[in-house]
Amino acid sequence: MEKEQQDQWRKWVIPAGIFLVLSSLIGIGVYQAYYNPKPARILETYGNQEIDTVDEKGNNVVVNRIHHVPDFSFIDQNGKTITQANTEGKTYVADFFFTTCQSICPVMSKSIMKLSSRLANDPDVLFLSHTVDPETDSVPQLLAYSKAHQAKEGRWYFLTGPKKHLYDMARYGYFSTATEGDGGQEDFIHTQNFVLVDKYRQIRGFYDGTDSLEMDKLYKDILLLKEEYAWRDSGGK
Image 1 (tube, rainbow, N blue to C red):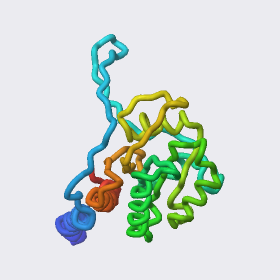
Image 2: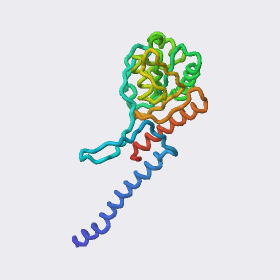
Image 3: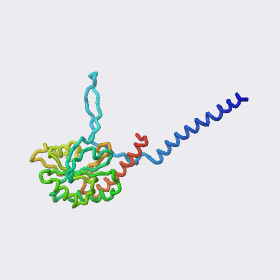
Image 4: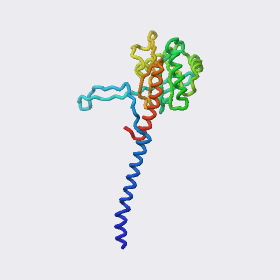
C-alpha cells in the first residue's frame, strides 16, 4: 500500500510541481514583456568606430569601439567642481553657449527653460551648458545668467574651465561641431546643437536648439530613453 502511495505521489505531485515552476517562469517573462515592452524605436548611438588592427597572432581584425563621453572636470555657476560623477545614472542634454551672445544663445537658453519645465518632476534628467567664452563667463557671470533663466539647482549646470578642455569636449567628446581648431586664442565655437547623452554616457541624438519642432523631438526622445532603460533592465537585448 505504501509503495502504491509513493508511486501515486511521483505520478502526480512531481509533474505538478514542475508545471508550477515552469508556469511561474513563463508568467514572469510574460509580465516583463507586457509591462516593459521593447520601445517602438531604439535611438541610435553616435561616435562609434570600426578600427582595422591586428590581433596577438598578427591576423587582420576589425574592432568595434563604442564611444563614451570622456571624463571631465568643470566649475559650475556656484563655484563647485562638476565631473562625470554628477551625471552618473542620469540622462542629460549638453550644449555650448556664451552669456554675451545676442543671436542663437538666448533662443537656446529659452528652449532649455521650456524643456526643463516639461521635465520638472524628473530628477534623472540634467542639463549641462558649457561656455565657449571662459575669459568673459566668470562664475559670477554664469550665476547671474542662471538666475535670469530660472535654472533649478542641481538640474541645470552652467560650466566653465580651461578653454582647450571645453573645446576638446565640444569637438571630440560630444561631436557638437565639425569645425576644426586647437582651443587657442583665435579659436571659436558657435553651435546651436543640443546633444542627448544617456545614462551609459553614450550619445543618442543631436537637435537644433533654436527649432521648436526639434525640441519637441528631444523631449519625446528623452521619454523614449526611459522606456529603453526599463526594457533593458528587464532583460531586453
